[in-house]
Length: 351
Image (cartoon, rainbow, N blue to C red; front, side, top):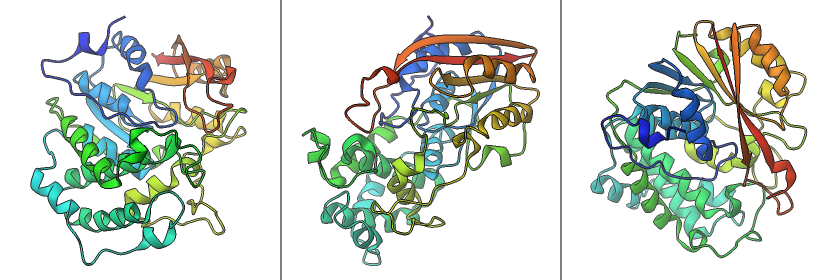
């Protein structure tokens, strides 16, 4: 198996900041890299960029990368680490972000009091959220937002915002650090991840079905998997992070929600009845591109059904398999159980 390091371009590839994120392919990067190494391609679309690690992989391989996701949080990760080739947050900018802003609001302090973080951490989040818009470039803003969201994720037990309080606090150092210190650590890691692969990379936020089709050499597709075993509702798990990424602008909190979560966003991949048609439409959207689809054996469509759908649009379909156990779980009984042990698939479709 060729590893990422063995395929690297003539520049040093930095480390990508790690974060627990549902569906992240971080542990499968070598598998994806091995399959992609068999292909001839220069431009790639990561249609559902999520944690950003696969987009970062393709950038590391010297490709021209376009990242897309409907989450603001995911967009800012990709804008900070993929689209951004040169901009880092200076020491002066970090000091500015940490400085007291007399015009800062108290939305987080009022709305989320007693739910996830201490009053001091909530006040810090309100204050720095008032300073971020004052930065001069989109890359600077995305670096700060990505780092701030990562700080909040690392401070929250299990990294999800479906429960309140600290009953899942296992005593790790991340929970002892203040939000301020977590941010300082995270902005340093995001700074270290910035590098120039000599390509013009881009990041977008939006519905992939609404994007104008472009003839990318390769389209990588890792959508929210529909599974009868669990939901794929990113908003439910990460509503606080998604709100924080925009300071709750353009979003709506679900009325009566105990955790103050955002209203669910519609996606056909959340529905058993609609996910088949969604794949069909997505494959048809990029008729001249090679398709590389990440998928798992506990999802629908099934392996055979996915092959049939892809064969409607591509003459040749290959399937690569990898045994994988997901460590992500919201409850103790889900972590390490048999339903987390799956075959991870890469479907490759080409003419």
